[in-house]
Amino acid sequence: MSVPSSSVAALRERFGDAILRHAVLSGDSIVYVQPDRSHEILAWLRDDPGQRFDYLTDVTAVEYRDAERPLEIVWQLRSLDRKADLRVKAELDKAAPLEVDTVCDLWKGANWLEREVFDMFGVQFRGHPDLRRILMWETYSEGYPLRKDFPLRGHLSRAEQTRQALAANPEAHYSLEELSIAEAFHELPDDVRERLRHGDRGKVR
Amino acid sequence: MTTRTVEYDLGTSGLDAQGRDLRVPLGVRRGDEEDALGGEHMLINLGPQHPATHGVLRLVLELEGETVRRCIPHVGYLHSGFEKLGEYRHYNQIIPLTDRTDYLSPMANNVCLALAAEKLMGIEVPERCQVLRVIACEMSRIISHLVWLGTTGIDIGAYTPFLWLFQQRERIYDLQESWTGARMTTSLTRVGGLMADIPDGWEDGLADFCRTFPKVLHEVDTMFTRNAIWCGRNQGVGAISAAEAINHSLSGPMLRASGVDYDVRKDRPYLGYETYEFDVPVGEHGDNYDRYLLRLEEMFQSTRILEQALGRLTRLKGAPINVDDPRVILPPKSRAMSDMESMIHHFKQVMEGVRPPVGEAYMGIENPKGELGYYLVSDGTAKPVRWRIRPPSFLNLSALPRMCEGALLSDVIAINASVDIVMGEIDR
Image (cartoon, rainbow over all chains, first blue to last red; front, side, top):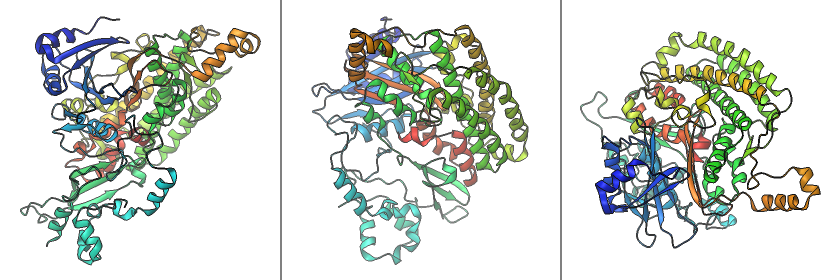
């Protein structure tokens, strides 16, 4: 059970110090890598003929209850040919900006997964083609819901949330440009036109 | 200012709540003046309240004539924060949350969570429990595929098979109800076992279903498989190659229709699936039609597995359904009411919950929609530090823009139907 995957030794040989440590938990091999070299290592794991981790099962993040511990980015890799799995992790210091290279260029499936990690944890993926919130709405301003400093019921009281929901302008949430209203742009009231020019799409004030 | 430049300006400026540039990728790009329509592109908003989007999915489509140039899905309308909620619940209390993610196959989700927690604790459940869980998973596969086939038929214009299929689905719901007491929110499993054994005579109901259900599938096969409209709407539509399907992290029928033979039941067996005889159908064209054939065949194969499991149930009559492990299983109620130690044990188990050791485990199972993975991280307390759902339909849907590029507007409906999404799981 506690024998690490053969990929661990191969990684150590190829990347040396960039492989920080490894563990075997519940039969799964986990490799901790230096965050700034994660992209290079993941690209090698995908392309090396001996590894062929062609399938990205999941990208996610883990924040521990212990505030001292770093935030972990987790890549679950799978080699469909070799029927092997590997979990790669990079630890990000929470005192520094949370940033890591995107793997969208390696696996297109990473696109939405990374957007979700950004949305829920606030991790910036360098080089991501379209890093927007995905589950929360774009104007959401309370923070990142899956962070441990985010209370279960949100930062705002129930009353305040209701007040804001009632005060929001739902039509502005349907960003007008999406709905082809541009045909009627000149007929819009001046203030609405001005707001749209500045990209204001109904942020709660 | 022409219409086009107005939209172009609208799509670029502004800051979002985090103070970053708001890059709305929705403004129509300046069209190519050479093309037939003089660069006129049209934006269509589909959903979130639309019968053909299978839930609250919103698609923004950029059309050139009737051809889709871009498709931008917007998800999150059903976001419920299940992963966050799970961090505040005991492991057994998370099981009702799993019902509500992929609500078309609740029993399979229950099984996955129990398996993940058991992997974390190093528990192996007894054989009768494994067989019952296999039955739960395969029943889920059948009802989920029935919903898919019925609604896809409606999307494409065939209403009758929908009624036949939902009649069959109702039979499984009746079985689920008599086993668990609920039709959809089953909460069937517990860490280390099951919430309840099947009631007396329940096997007969399932055996009856297995005997008569294939007949209905054959009728649907007659209606659809060689139907000119069905073939015309599905063949060659929404095709994606094997390499691209892997690169987009598709799973389940979506991946196999493209010719990639990856089924978690075969490649990383759990619950003793390696001891059942069944075939995994694999497509070759990766289009809607192959996905249809594949799911249809999967229902026949699931029936085959159910029949084998029923045979094993007879052999295992009266065997325990729960693991004999005081860390996870409650003592019998009669003991808890008469014996001091059992009462303390019962109290602690109910009040404090199951406590896995420090560690983490990823458990992936073959759900009807694809590979469902639950990734649990434990710090030794009764509540997980992180409960990550690897949602198959989320990843399958993320390839929708790729599949819709260059298709016709009417194809978008057919392609979206063939992806078999369930928004409860995508938005979680």
